[in-house]
Every structure is written in C-alpha cells, then in structure tokens.
Length: 309
Image (tube, rainbow, N blue to C red; front, side, top):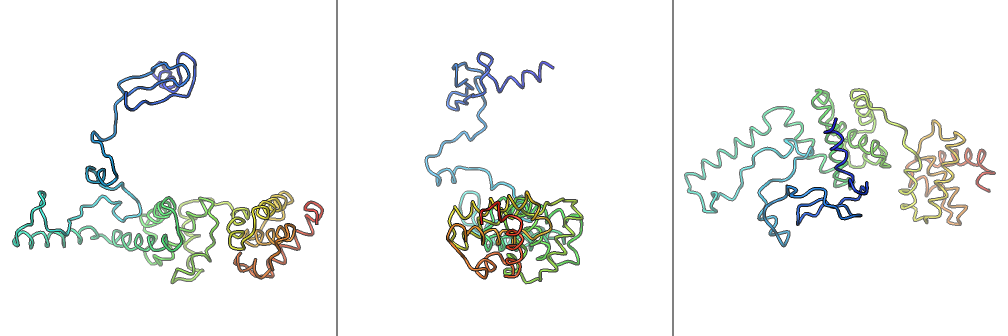
C-alpha cells in the first residue's frame, strides 16, 4: 500500500502539492518549478554516452539500427549483408572470400522469404509503400493499415483473395478509424481491382476482426471539398453549422456523408456570396448532381427557417 502511495507522490511536490515538475538532465535532478525543492537526484540518463554536434556526426556514432516497423515484412529485424565487399576494418576482401560472401547473400535473401506468408507480406508491404506515396498517407496510417493486413494474413484469410483488394480495404479501414475523409472511390484510380472486390474485402475485415465502425461524419469532408472548390473559411464554418442542424433534426440518417457535405456547401456558398454550380460541387464530392439536388431540397424543406433562407 505504501509503495503505491509513493508511486503516486512522484508526480507531486510534497511541499506545495504542485504537479509542474522539471527534469534537469545536466544535473540528473527532478525539481519543483514552484518552490524549487529537489525531489530526486542522480537520475539515470538512458541516452547515449557520446555527444554529437551535427546530424551527420550523430549518424556516424550511432550503434543501433532503424526502429522496428510493421510496414516491412520482417519488421526490420532481419540481417542485411552489405554490397561493398569490405570487412569490419573497411579493407577489401579477397576474391575467394568474395565468392563465399556472394553465396551467403544469396541464401540470406532466400531464407528471408522462405515461407509463403513472408512472400505475401513482402509483396503487400511494397504495394503499401506505392499506395502511401500516391495518396500522401502519413506514417501512422501506413502502420495502422499494415497492422490490419497482418492480422488478416495470420488468420489465413488472404489466400484465394486479391492482395491488392485486401490491402486497399485495410488502408480504407485505417482512414475510417482515424476519421480521415476518404472514400473507396479515392483508391480506385491507383488500383487494378474493381470497387466490388474492395468493398467485399472491407466487409470481410470488419466481420473477422469484429470492428464496429460508425458512419463517417459529413463534417469531416467539408474542409477537403472547400479546398478543392477554393471556398473561404466562412463558407466552411457555415456548412458545418448547417450539417450540425441537419444532424439535430435527424436529416442525416441513412444518407451518404459526401452528398450531405456537398449539399451543405452548396447552401453555405450561396449564403456567403461564393456560389458554385451543382456540377462543380458534384465533381468535388464524387456524387451525381441529382444527389446534390435531393439533399439540397431536404435541407431547405427542414431547415429553411433555421438557416435564414
């Protein structure tokens, strides 16, 4: 019991009960920022024992490899044999040893992907790199998509299905989990599989991994469509206000979020004097003009008095 109390008190100053504590790395002390009491001294420094004054010098002195990552099929833990043909002292190796090293390199490459799951992951992670660069996905999203794909691979659910479709479904699910406004149509341009296959794989992942995903909020799509249509921040804020009112009056239930966002932007742009045609908005939202018109009519019929039109 005393131990747990001591653990809690480490984050508080015993003199003034202040939580604002400072770690002085040069002295190895934890100090209270309010009263100056030294709570702990001789704190162990877990950093390197060497100093570097430039990024190049730090790179030369570092003795560890890159951090592990799920975006490499072996998580970056496998051994790599260099191509420079030099020994540990930087001297050229003998011709006899060259042949030996060449043989070792060849077998090293073979053993890295000797299992079918490793070959599958190696191909899939290369494809993930390609998608990420084309779609400008962040490192965190790549890691999340790789994690989802690996889960499916270890459940042996990739076999017999398109690797590309399963990978795009994983990326799309990762975007949905992180509230990033993307639709399946955004991925079709860079894929060689059709939308139905991707949607089927997406539903399979949700079912097998038991993931519950809420419907995307149309407000998430508003900044993206505003940027494409070159609309001001005032229009963006007004569109978000209209969508919040629509949610309050339950107009958004069962409607596609992209169509709702497009219709709200159409109304907001008219109000702010930045009118855009229904065709321009339908192209930005990736829906038909009829959808924009129908959502527009619903918003107008229900919110005419609320939005002062």
